[in-house]
Image (tube, rainbow, N blue to C red; front, side):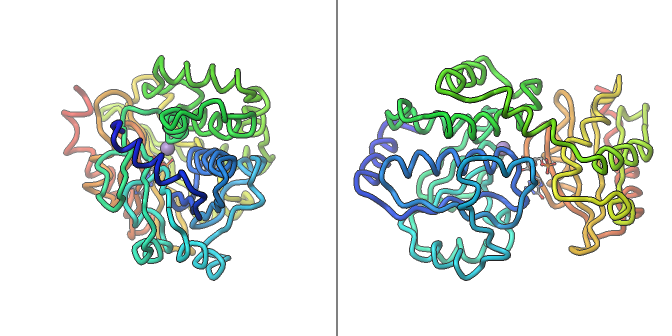
Length: 338
Ligand code: 5GP
Ligand code: MN
């Protein structure tokens, strides 16, 4: 963000404002962490802030301070719309195209509030008055840290804000191992710890609260693993029946796709998860190196994301979807073997 924009935003917030913070559908650690981190900061500055998310999120994110105030648009639509319709400012965090807000898309389009986008995905749409978009950032949480700093308020970052922002950085970087983790990321993390982030507790809350059924679901997923060494690709499937048999709960499949990528020699991994309720196959894609799963997903599976992590969906059956995927691999053989 340039000096002029920062100045304009400072002026905008020089008086108490009614602010709504929204994130993408099926919120992850970065979406909830950045939303609640920014929420605590704005409230500290004297604004009246509400976080509205499109739908529910996993249990392992519900320990975050402020969690109990979050409105879910799908189950609290009237109340959510009241806040959206009367907001002076709406922050959109961790997404850059309004359709990513799911059923909230229309309400966001209709709103006259000043919109501010903070996001690290590729190819941002142009719906916001102020756009802070940076694809080199590990996470939206890292960007919220810089945003607060740019406004001259890093001294206001307390332990609650630090825990929230730490969460999104650790989840989006795969615990600091993806290439998006930079020296700057570690400096931000160090500062968050110095400001009171309980790093060991946060890791424990996110990664060490497995249920027995989730581990059994992982066992099922791994037993479905298919490997294609000639394409340096591996994928996993989970049918609705397998999810039901293993007492699936939101968030249980988080991170499963990375097991495919952890195989020696594999640079492209996918997971296909059947969702009978929405009648779609939800797809997560991961890669190593230059192979862009963002491009792959945009082109073939109605999705997007980052170079090395993207998502998408398919209206075909699970079997047809994996067949389509296997057929596509042939077209990418050269790229995948570069
Ligand atoms: P995940 O596979 O963990 O759901 O998502 C990986 C990345 O891709 C995240 O940054 C997420 O925001 C993005 N993403 C996931 N699903 C979609 C989708 O359907 N459309 C777009 N544009 N991005 C997605
Ligand atoms: Mn993110």
